[in-house]
Amino acid sequence: MTKETQNLENTILELGQRIQELQNSAEQDDSSVQIKELEEQKTSLQKEMYSNLSPYEIVKIARHHLRPPVSDYIKMMVDDFIELHGDRNYGDDKAITTGFGSIGGKKTLIIGQHKGKTTKERIDCNFGMPNPEGYRKALQKMKLAEKFHLPVITLIDTPGANPDIGAEERGQAHAIAMNIAEMSKLRTPIICIVIGEGGSGGALGIGVGDKFSILEYAYCSVISPEGCAAILWKSKDNAEEAATALKLTAKELYKLGIVDDVIPEPIGAAHNNPEEMAKTLKETIVRYIEELQAIPLDKLIEKRYKKYRKFGHYLGGE
Image (cartoon, rainbow, N blue to C red; front, side):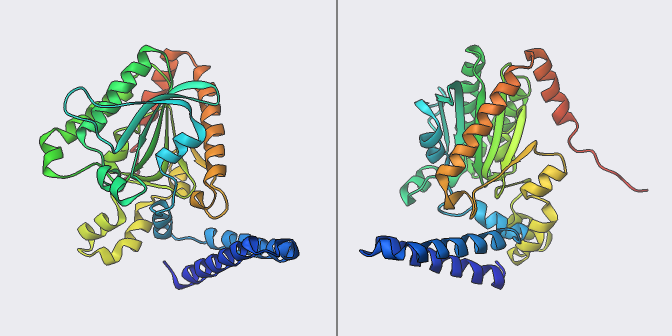
């Protein structure tokens, strides 16, 4: 993070604390004018800070410890959520949450990668890095959604799939490949949205759909900036340079045609106003469902296939 951004962030935090103190004071009525002035000043600084972020600073915001996880979005925008567990083969991976629920009156299957909020939750969820049983659980539930003609909503937030020996022994690469293949032809609408980190094959395992969108301060990349720096420069100190080269921000991904939409976040990013972010996300999902359900199923699958076939075009020199 640049020195200028750090200074702005510190000032914003100080203003927030001052506003909170005035709101909690016994003489709140006498402080209303001052509170309003401080809030306007805070909003102005947030706009200035968030309009000049570097790619690596956006990565850090996507990883912010207060950024709403999938469990928060489910609570704020899904009615009558019924969680489904297990892959009927090995176990229940807590890094992937699946279940049926209603979003804006639309019955759906929700699949989300969960990082957890507390330290215990994060350990239980393996910090959002799914195992093969998580991807198999997700696919099994997608097949149920297909059977009952329900749209599938996937909320992506992972630094990557679990790379440890146990996961590889249980078929991590095969599980992700199977999901990609099956999602490409699943006979029901699929909506994929990156809400935080969209790391490599970990994101792709639930990231093939008719709509693929991203929140404004999320990112999606074939590798983390630190991983890229370690390979190309042999040092994580070059992570900022790697983040710029990877073109991983929402703005760059939209420009490249990788994502369909960039979903705006509240001033100060999603963690500053989770309720507003959930409202925007809910409205976007409902709009997507209505658009996709109006398309004949055979045409929808054909469009999905052609969409992903177009990725990877490049211009080569002699």
